[in-house]
Length: 410
Image (cartoon, rainbow, N blue to C red; front, side, top):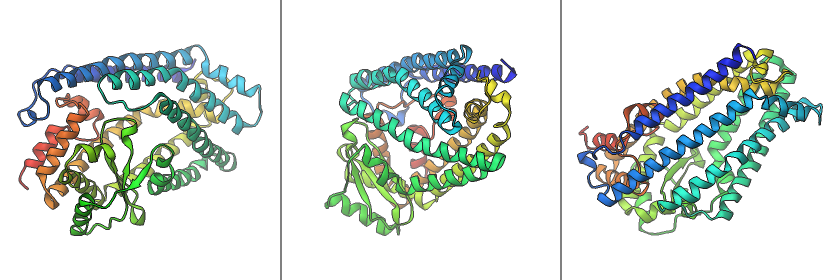
């Protein structure tokens, strides 16, 4: 046990304490009166249901996060990483296969141990409050597909990075950066074509008044939109969403079928106008670029630590290795990741205001306001979040802030 071991313990415990305090502060606002501008979101019965939903999730997060911390600390203190490392070293000598087996055992083991929490969240909490539409068969199918995708994609990327490391030494980070940047670009362009169909069915939006209104708006603002799809989100949840993906000829708008069911056509166009605002203001390009730059920074810092045997020893692994150092570095880097996350969340909230303003100026504020209220109502969202929680975790401004911004004269 070296000083880095105690540093890792301190980081994990401190992060847990900060998150627990933030959750407590946020929960302390659940019973606050609804702001005047939001009185029409919930009636009395619905508001009580919303508060109970938030309180239930608060208690659940406290239990699940405590379990995760205890599991991680136990694995560190009682030599879990060393046990897995020695186990796979007894089976194979190839360092790349050792790393793949090492991460495979840890990821699958962690997934299995936390599976009951995921099951409870879906089939008890979400079911109780009327959100869940997932069958048990679909739930487990999604889990298995997720594990397979993690093995194929994560395993392939890890293998290539370790090959770069064996070939280029500490300069491996440059080649790994190029690889991950390319992967990020491909995922951004083709995620809806390659990944989404594995989990959901997507169909082109049928001809009708909604499609005509969307196409008319797109022509008005000079937005070349040929791909409008509807996704069957209702087979998992009643919650609604819409998102924009890709750019250039691959850009597409995807509407959840629940969104089409819950909102009026003008409200859906207003939501689309918000998404177009993100594209027009180049938020998607900025986020992709920022992600790639941060990845480069992370990999460069990793290259400075990866050959230090103390980083492997910090998680209790006696034989220094790339895979053990990768885990140790991941925890040691997490405070930096938290700081960059705060910056990105702040920028994201700013971008949301900008996209709202674009929708207000090119379509109508009223329709966007009514759509935001309906979406908040249907998801039983928190109308009175604590400012500290918003600062740390919200990528979107609170509903009240967005409505006040939309009503503000430009």
